[in-house]
Length: 301
Image 1 (cartoon, rainbow, N blue to C red):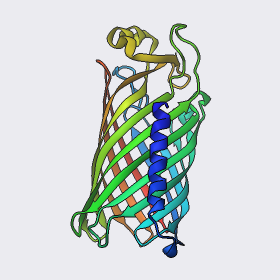
Image 2 (cartoon, helix red, strand yellow; image 1 turned 90 degrees about the horizontal axis):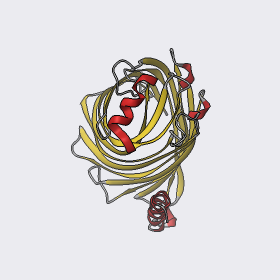
Image 3 (cartoon, rainbow, N blue to C red; image 1 turned 180 degrees about the vertical axis):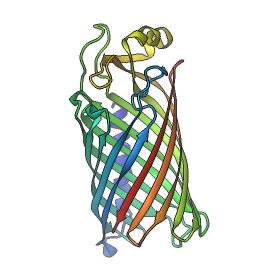
Image 4 (cartoon, rainbow, N blue to C red; image 1 turned 45 degrees about the vertical axis):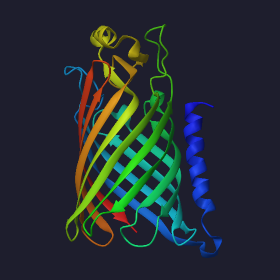
């Protein structure tokens, strides 16, 4: 059994295991899920380049939505079924205009009664990412779990584990000795998120995530030799880049992400969200940095 199959099978078994402990007597359909968002996002290193002269920045208009329903399997176990989408329209690099649609099933199990009792969430998600540059389009799969806990009336947090798999297309050949499946990537991610209710209506969030696996980067033709001189066999695939020019390559490495944000409730259903992320990635030698700032208006039912 392959690693990807093993991970998906393990999460599926956990979902079934939680369902098995849910007494059917209390089972009923509960509340609906309805969420919408739109806003602006700016990335300082959109092409994730390691070379300062190659870095491209850009902003994008974003939109997202999520809908579904929650099934109350027992007093302590709920199941959510949901469909979601996310889209982005770039200001300059319209080859990266994209829409992602996916479906998700999740099981939430609370280990007792009371607001401070931990809750386990196990989920599986599958979807498709459509990009204007068709080589980048492909299937997106994610499974994982989280454990959340309220620590006080104002402070709570969660720890999580995720497995990501992206099955992208193939680009145009650059080197006959390497494949062109730059966007076939898998990663494992662990992290922690926290939130603090600063005052009524204002929620402050902070988090850290560590990801191990594969990512892609762009470089101009003049820097390709430097990539191979410093990364060597760590370069797994390379193809022509239709969006930025030059080449795009896939390699293995570690990614650290630090994030923070402020969420302000405007009404019972609308909120404004300001977010910031700092991403630091390191391969064998090359280093990749990116800052992401976002501002969104959110609606929840």
